[in-house]
Amino acid sequence: MARIIPPRVTSHPSWKSLKAHHKEIASTHLRELFASDPGRAARMRAEGAGIILDYSKNRLTDRTLSLLFELAESCKLSDHIREMFEGQHINKTENRAVLHVALRLPKSASLVVDGVDVVREVHEVLDRMGTFAQKVRDGSWKGATGRPIKNIVNIGIGGSDLGPVMAYEALRFFADRRLVFRFVSNIDGTDFAEATRELDPEETLFIVSSKTFTTLETMTNAHTARRWLLNTLKKDEAIRHHFVAVSTNAQAVSAFGIDTANMFGFWDWVGGRYSMDSAIGLSTMIAIGPENFRKMLDGFHAMDEHFRTAPFAKNLPVLMGLLTVWYTNFFGSQTVAVLPYDQYLKRFPAYLQQLTMESNGKHVHLDGSLVDTDTGPIYWGEPGTNGQHSFYQLIHQGTHLIPIDFIGFARSHNPIGDHHDILMANLLAQGEALAFGKTAEEVRAAGVPELQVPHRTFEGNRPSNTLLAPELTPAVLGALVALYEHSVFTSGIIWGIDSFDQWGVELGKVMAVKIIGEIAGKPAEGGPHDSGTASLLDWYRKNRRKG
Ligand code: F6P
Image 1 (cartoon, rainbow, N blue to C red):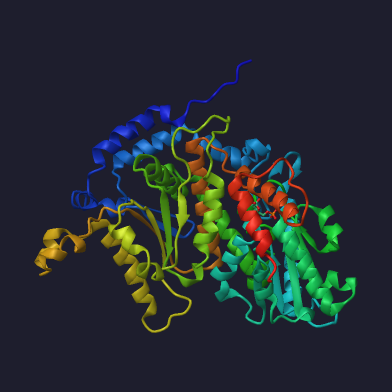
Image 2 (cartoon, rainbow, N blue to C red):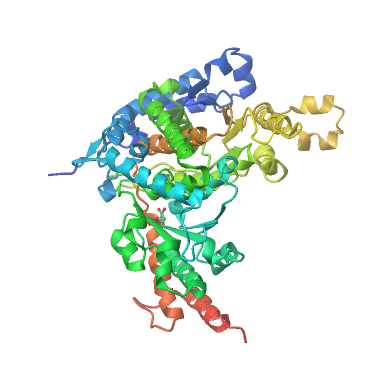
């Protein structure tokens, strides 16, 4: 029987209408949109799970929105959302459910997937994590020589690192300052060496975080950590006091020598980049305490419920996911800048890079056919106001259209003098300057010499979202992360791709293993390299040892 190929999104009538509509409004300036519509800002604002989204400074009208909602309807977005929450196997290429939303369901809930109540399992692990985290925090978890743990080193990479680092930095205000947290991810030995340089092995706990427990970087770093520890503590017996594991692979954990009683599990329905609220968040829980961790989960859950139930027009993740499609596919934008005006969110853009780009950086539809339009944009960013003195020049006056997400809070955890007012004034000023710019007439009227006028003119019409919340609490962080998770999902549904696999990381891994063998003197497997790679490898072989 012939395979039924679903219609491509570009053939949907609403896509065609959006194309035509884009032509009509592409040259309309945000100045005109605001001037002709006094109610715009009040109307183009939505709120969910304690986060406000102001999307009025986007290049769209009510007609754009209704066409985008039509597109979402024609792509059956609501059905797809329901399927995810029900635990259907929506990760088609790996035949898996995608259930990070189950990680934050309350204990009283129940969700039976493939015959198992996953909520019960999730809470069993959370309870075990809570007991363990409490022991480390109160000093009753002792190292092999009886000293309490002072240093916690998370070893992991990708989703087993970026979420934990980001959450630790974001929630540092809530962290127990007696404890030191380090994160080792890179295979570069410098990462391990610098992270552990002044740590005392007797007071150090390693959390080996790896869903598969086979990842080359993590396993190499974990073995190095083992040697580093045993160098001082000598006996293998010390391992169980200083190593715990977070993984889905009990067999490999045990083979490494970690007592599986000290292993915290999760499930194949949690993708690496969607796992910071699973046991992968153990370091976060030790830092901020089980109660704050649960508040973070509540924030995630509140945004899940908002996403599941709010109408599209009021639904933050749906709005943001559709705006990504609008700019990527109709304006041809290649990137999105995420600019948090909060120092605690300094690692948030890096975290979002994996979440968004590993999810939606795909070139084929779910059925394997080639996409015929662009998919996931490049995400990048830095905390404000640092970026202003670096790359904002290009955003204001360069030739690329870069949609922006500004993130800010009403209150700082460190209310020193007028720092926070100045910070927030900058956020507001940037959104306004980007949208409205400064015309040549305005520049001339300010007495600028004619020679400089073109250089000091700001075209404006540069779009931004502004996300606001009262303050950066564990719950708000959870809601913020869930907001991006679901907006990535929304865009992925429109593009008809699998947002939950990551086959694109495989080829480089396999080729690295082959080259590792060759550096060690083994013959090249599977034929010679291209001449460029061969000569680089040759240079490396000759120069890798001093002298
Ligand atoms: O190489 C990419 C990746 O598979 C990510 O998706 C994942 O987060 C990371 O590697 C780490 O994987 P693991 O947790 O299995 O070590």
